Amino acid sequence: MKSSSRWHYSRADLATSYLQQLEAGLNSIAIFAERRKGKTEFLLDDLNPVARDKGLRTVYINFWERKSDPVYCITQGVKRSLEEHSPSLFKRWKKEFSVKLGAIQAKASIDPTTHPELSTEALDMLVKSKDAVLIMFDEIQHLATNPEFEDLVSSLRTFLDTNKKKVRAIFTGSSQDRLNKLFRRQKAAFYRSASLVDFPDMGEDFIAFLIGNFEELTGRKLSVQKAFDIFQDYNNSPFVIVDLLYTMMREGLYDFDKGLSYYIEKNNPSEEWRDLWDSLKLIDQVVLRELILESRPLYHSDTYKFVGDILGIGKVTRGAIQTSIKRLREKGILNNEGHGQWAFESKEFRAYAEASNNT
Image (cartoon, rainbow, N blue to C red; front, side, top):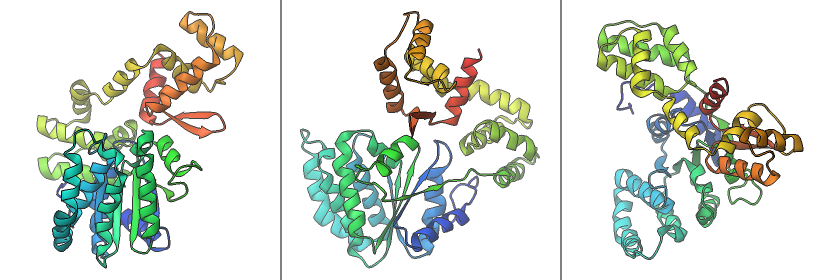
């Protein structure tokens, strides 16, 4: 199966390696990578066709499709899979399930997130045929953002455990901290239910592919090394380098210095980090810049005075630091690495905070 985009760089070998791990005995694996690293494109354009070629029915569920309602995300993912790949089961879906789903969702006073059993009933439709199934859960860490989703997580774990012989799962997430909450916290429903695996950055071969594509479309040759340098400067983000080349092609810019200057002027990738930084309370900025980046002890009397002096209030309390850390964690900025150690979730935001520290 070929991607619809000529800019898609195939990672079929990586997809095959993940499936081999599942075939070797793992029921589920979890992939972590920051936003804009190409996880979703990989699932849809690499893993999906490779799995289909191996005889698996595939289901794609994205928990950012409707963040307030993960049950909807699951039911819609199952519905699309049945409609595309299993006409007979889709007929049963319309007859047996959609009526019930519609009746519940039509009652405005009932929140669908309080009915996790609907997700299990939808998923049960997948195992009514003899085919093995691969379910791709994209942005699974979203289920760690709200305690109301805990029953749903338990239902998913039960479904996967009950159907081990027929169902395999791949989870992706863009928050290491929230993935840890789901898969590494002892009391979590998904505790040790998936093996965490690396999602490696793409390398110079990816850049060479893009530059070759650019030359084929425009007749202009660009430097692979210069493109690779830009790619690395922007945290090896496929989104940024492809968007830059799109922009250069559209604007008729065939020099990286001019192209990057124009791109940053019109669409600066750092703007979202500036907006995020500006949205933080002053104490949160100080905690990030003066404590986390400088590796200062968080809970020490000297720290409380140090932070208080910066804020102009003489001294802060331990509770103020704890509240700040909690806020930063809830915003998805900090990852708890254990033993009192905290790290930035995003390398790009860390770089922005470091730069702001030097201004």
